[in-house]
Length: 58
Image (cartoon, rainbow, N blue to C red; front, side, top):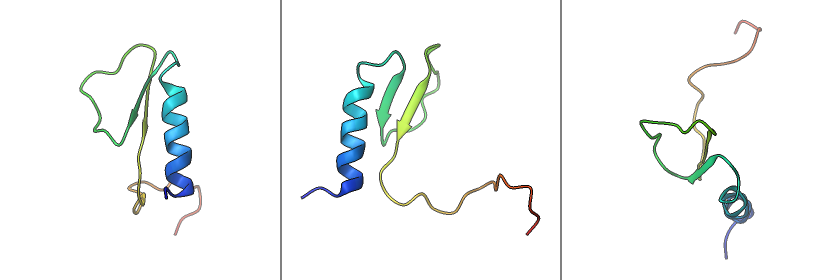
């Protein structure tokens, strides 16, 4: 049985196939991005962020 996250990503990926931008699932970043845009949906844990977008100083 798929997880809720997997079900949502599958539905979003299916919807993105009809969008003007390119929708990929769990793919590496391509060398070129189309003029319409790019959306990459990833499964799994996001891990620790490389950059914190906060004005607060730790």
